[in-house]
Length: 354
Image (tube, rainbow, N blue to C red; front, side):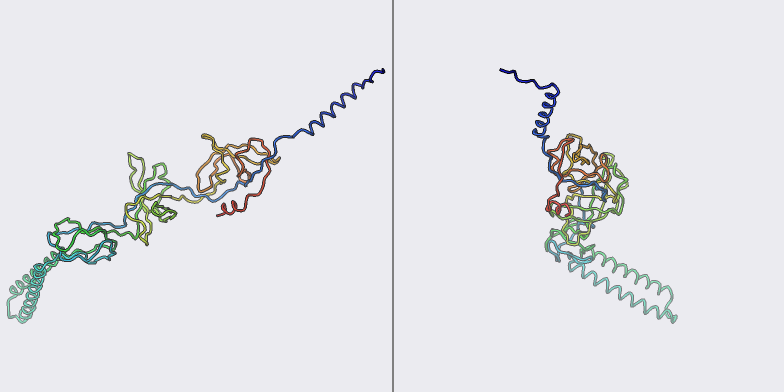
């Protein structure tokens, strides 16, 4: 039997190389590219906000009380009535006071008539000047008694000092009241004064005229707009906070004194780098995003974040305007991973625009 011919060594090396290339082409080249959506980082208008809790107060508030000891004759209001300034709420005047006013008025008219007659006589030199002076003093004394009687009677007619809404009625006809007895509460709630505390670190960022919005658990989804009117002159040495007062128009009387409101204080608008909040991956105290590269891969970039608002976050460091970052699909990515970018769904685009 003839021996099998041996292949030259060089030919053997070439054959092995070709086999290796074929095996390499047959083997998979790596994991498939991940499908992601991306967006460009751009400067956008941004307004910083301070959030706090505040207490609503009435524009004007008073407890209507009695000034004298007397029996209630008539009550002219019901619980929750809207009244104007000067409206009579309670009448405490009795027959004695009314009769006393009539007597004082009659005495004053008589003294005035006597003075006018004697004034004519004195002009004709028929009576001495001293007699005219005595009658003038009597007339002025009668007028003083009349004014005093009217003042005492006015204390028995309780009126509204300003326009507003009344609380619960505390008296009834026949009730004996004394000085200090509460008749009802009266609040002017056409404008609400909102007091809230701001840390002293933000004192330089607060000034009169700034816009605020407030929300209440009683009105979910509603925002009440107002402006800062006053910043307190002192910082509380215990809490290291300063009290700020704002005013909110309340024409529908939806806000009531004593309500707890959440306050957002807006700073002047500025330009900031803004990205979607879902593009950020937070691990412990560090946050990073995935930035698109020209070769179709992504790189992990650590960023410093600033303020947040609904669905968006400010980037302070780590990115520049014009960078393209991954928005959807960041969970399955690693540094250097290859990606395939697709358009965002229409519904998501519409939601973001809204």
